[in-house]
Image (tube, rainbow, N blue to C red; front, side):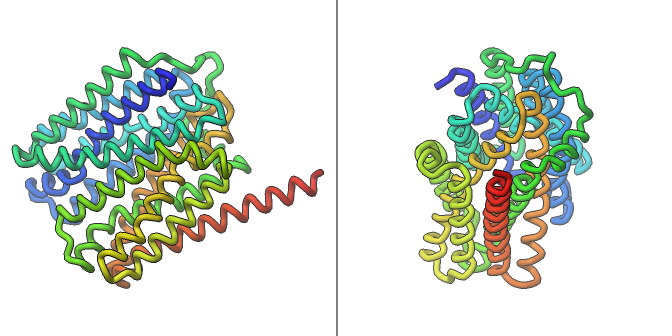
Length: 389
């Protein structure tokens, strides 16, 4: 494996473990300051909203000044936010910490652009699969570590997250070379890049599918514990065990299978298959009334999601030129942040008004719609190409 790819993935793993530590902790930590459930939701959401604002700017900035300084800046900002959170004495301080983390949280989009710089199109989906695996490892080990350190104090996991982020910063500082030639970088305004991305005929449909996919995924993540508790009486440990198991399955698929399936089927067919499996799994889980059947249906969802994430990122990257990778990846990250903001709110409202089956059901419907739209766009593109010939 290319050492640069190994270092960027290792940096993300360490950083995402630090991020994952906060998943079981943040709501309870905010409650110690007297925050209501509504305020806790806002504390969680403000991170994605801040990322929505910052990602296009950081992506374009990485095209202008280089990937390495932007990645280092984002990691340092994340470490500072954890320190602010550990020292917080009030809810406004928690909000400030989350805003700092969100505004500096361009490490994922910058990492994707970096990988696009150092890989060929043939190898890109497999390389993006490693980013998905980094997410999986972070979201399996991080919550487990956060829960274990939570027995010490509320702030112990936060200090651990800050320390891990500093380790990731050191790895990037010492071992990660620059890949962008500054003279060829895109000098356009930050938000102009986001507008230009949606004006791109090939990219616009992918960004719409990206929004639908991440909204559906965030809807599942935001309502899973509530659905499992309401329907089966799951407590926090059972929810954690299930999510950890399916996170491990996702890591296996992205590391071991994506690199084999994509050459056999092609990226577009692999992505459509992933959407189909995800929609089928969530649709079945929405209707399952027994724990074994519920868990069985979540298997195709986990496999489908693991296929979709790296392939979609690769498809998006291929629509950009070498001098606009950061801008395009920043736009994609902004879309993902919007989906992660909409999904949990939408899922909670649907669950409260219509019942838990509709929470997963609407997510399955959105994934199926995204698949049909994606296949329809591909079909129309093929028809246009034949007509032109």
